[in-house]
Length: 457
Ligand code: HEM
Image (cartoon, rainbow, N blue to C red; front, side, top):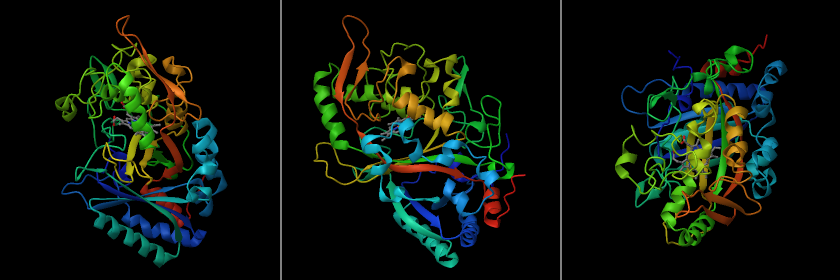
């Protein structure tokens, strides 16, 4: 399907793959100055056009929260047409999302204790490029007086052994599986789209990630009005997830000694992939660097020959987050629960064996989807924090689960010689430090917003 690539923000259709990022949180100063600021930012926004020559050295994208729409005085009928979870915001959904105890909104970073209208992201090739783009943003703010910066969050690929790495702080390779959809810049990677039968895959429908197009149910979904505001936009979830590296390492060290397969295999069972990214579904006994390096194979698997989880546990992170064909309707249900993951780690990596200092570190998790409630919230609520769909009752994701009271993780066995192994006394390894839901408008919609032209009739 031909999409208007000049109208769609670039972060929806492609992963930029830059090692440095900065997320800037802002409030509009007033309606009119705010409209001026928005208008001034538009020419600097990176759209989805194909980069025919080399990549630009930096990119810029923008998202608006509900309070931004109010600040811009968007007509009430239009604001009310937005999905309820977006209107309520992420803090309001905390209980349903399991964001309780240390992860509860009262404990989030200061910036999330008040109103946040805008998320502006800068991705860059070098730290210098990031500063150059940030200076442009600061100049636009100074020229228009239309926004004030509340906070900034830097994020970067982890430097391990002197080089930028694909790893996150617990040591796993990340950024492998990603839903291919008709309009995404990456298409036809086996395993990334949806199951098409006979070992084949096909791209998901645009409407799962882009507003204004048919989704997997051949419906348009409940779109905000008017269509000009909604079309070519998307919704983004922003979550700052702090990783407690010491607790995680101590746990896998201690339980790795008890588990017959040892620590490395235990970590693979938690994730569903070995630390180098090799999927357990394809290589349950060992890492396979050649397999991981081959994009045609590294994500090309299903779970239907492993329904008991002997290879990849039913509760492993990647199997919960995308159960593929292991739940109802041969993968069709999972196709309605996909998310495009963007984002990167923040903080410095602590090499294994070294004392973990008190500095902040974790992942800036960002997910794009056309329905936050059907896609992200469902995964977080039903699959990450709760395990009923996998016959695991209340047991939560071993890596991500919020466990104010310690939980457990079951590694299924294969019979009498190899009984199930149960890891117990498992605390939370992740604490949510804040975030919200943002609307990522099209360039057309941004023009309309900056000109005060939204007419819901
Ligand atoms: C600190 C937090 C997190 C860590 C350390 C983490 C780590 C990982 C790793 C290492 C992978 C495997 C590599 C890959 O397939 O790209 C992965 C995959 C994935 N994660 Fe996470 N993740 C985190 C948070 C989340 C959250 C909050 C969600 C959603 C609610 C999520 C959803 C997914 C999905 C959908 C996949 C791909 C699964 C597939 O298609 O096979 N992750 N994650």
